Image (cartoon, rainbow, N blue to C red):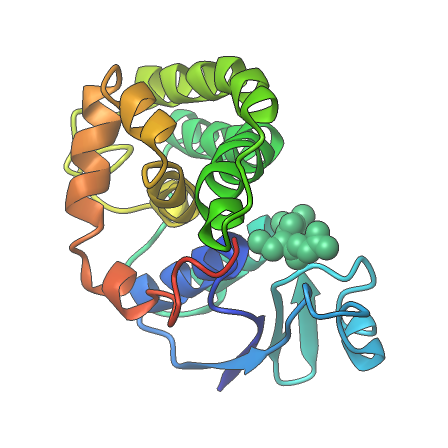
Length: 215
Ligand SMILES: N[C@@H](CCC(=O)N[C@@H](CS)C(=O)NCC(=O)O)C(=O)O
């Protein structure tokens, strides 16, 4: 049995969970709240010294960094392959993962979703300047992913890959904001893929208990 440490509200935890679900690997989600006052428990820092979620344990093998976890889940277990076979297709998938980590997460999730949706839930005003300044990069992220996306049914073609697992949690939060909906109008492949992927069993099984709490 795999242990995955983290919280269901986290996009990175959901990405790892989606890979586990798509692969058909049994796992237990061990709760760690990195946003608790005082941060994650000291014992968790032995698993993830940077204090981020997720971390994974497979017996005495411990692993952190989501991209490493995604590839480990795909390569260590039976089940449908979540990485393409050819060098070019695999490079494309890795390019998408890097775009998501380096440009999408901060911008789509923190710059827009957290500002527009999470902050305003308890009556605080959204920081319109922060949102406006995130929008330019958000448009670039979306148009870059749209340019790389296949016609479907999955992000990169006929079958799901780690790129679907990593992109869906971030883009589905982004889409909850009005700015996300507006930007996604200019990305028909991405918008169609997201609508379909949201109905997938793996995505529904990993729905956060209270989806709008945090990222
Ligand atoms: N590089 C890390 C990033 C993971 C990450 O940023 N996780 C977020 C939750 S989605 C987190 O732990 N945030 C807590 C914090 O930044 O203090 C990975 O790929 O696993």
